Length: 397
Ligand code: PHB
Image (tube, rainbow, N blue to C red):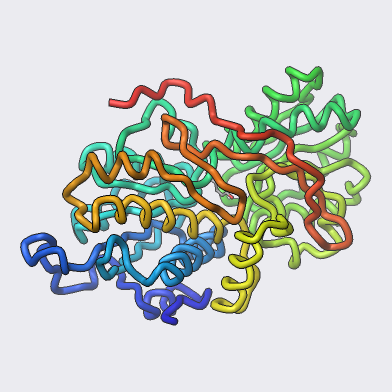
């Protein structure tokens, strides 16, 4: 199988992906009939703190396609990838490289909420179908929602709000929140705070650090001085790995650490002892005991030689969504209203559990409560069943 084996960007591009701007000859799509390849453009980070996330999404996507015959709607696929560097300033330009430069049929990505807002701006103008495979920015399925914008991941609110009630139930009354200062962090912290204050808790201090800084010493000293009952945090990727290790090293482990599950997903092994006891909410957990999850995890480990995580699941489900849409129109991407309608109605048998999409095109999904015990992510239960984002401000045209 021609998979990108989880290697640096150059290797990923060699493994069947073409860097945007690098191909000299771009066939005119339907001018040469339905046999032309479908172009899927990945707008993902392949460098920086979120590099591992971009790689997992790419791998998961390709695995689902490979398992379903390697095609979309009967057509072969050409993958094109742009390293978005998790740089919001380059979001519109990098999206345009795929949409205008490469004429892709679909954009898949990004990871970073700031990049997503730039992408949304461009695809709202061009009408290109986009599948957000991670970024949780509420606006993309809120005020900026559109018929051609879909999300297979979550909103930042969805992964954080349920923890508010859980924290109060566990006797935590005064909590410090800490994250990176950008949409994802701020939305996760405010989502938690909404659930937490509703249940009777109080956020005593919110700390925001610049993205993607991982210098947390001064913040950890401040938290130690504040002596809260608990700490709620959003960090992901390399930043999450570092934060959890630094938190333990600073001697703060007696203060319960909570967050959306990105805090441990994909980095749990590397965090080692430091992650013990960390309590998280997320729409996925490695240990989910379903046939879909078991076969997905086995196939992923076999293909890529590493464990799947939530990002791999989101890549996998992004492909499933396109498979269902493209099957309905038999590969005819020009039948856009029918394609969009089929995508809207799709039922995704995900490793996370079966989900459907809300009117705003965001997953309606269970949010699991998880805790690290003995180095394993244990599922304690379902924190919220069938949780839909409120999608405030979404008016579909
Ligand atoms: C985001 O920027 O929306 C984001 C990034 C990484 C995550 C989750 C959300 O793990």
